[in-house]
Image (cartoon, rainbow, N blue to C red; front, side, top):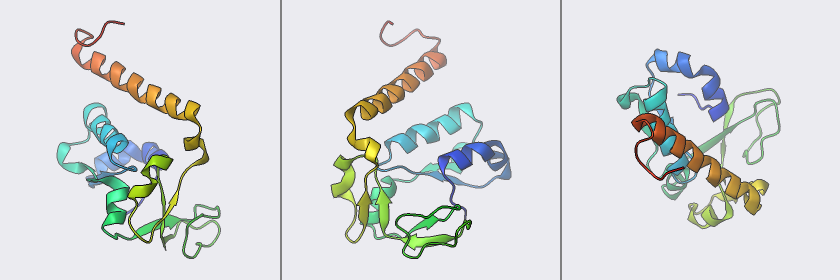
Length: 153
């Protein structure tokens, strides 16, 4: 088992696809990771039996009391129960869970500390993320059906 950020995964995507391992994606509640899992299946050649979206995502994991880990990656890691050595990619337990925005904070399981990114509190950035998600969906749905369905542009 290895834990990768989305950026780390993208850098190795083809090699990981060819390795035959099962890929489990997650986000705060499951929506964004569901879109990403679908993208891996539709556009990047992953097989359906090898890409899973963690049901309920990270918030469900905290509700179930599942253990979380964090890595050093050469920087101080907020939320590490004990910080890994600088420059280390060692995983250590944590009780901090990063959520997409403040409205998700109440859904974390008991005993977990919720961390909300500062950018999530700025409405302009949230709308930018929503617009980007819609744009990606729109362009993807038009590619699949040749642009014959959906609203007119």
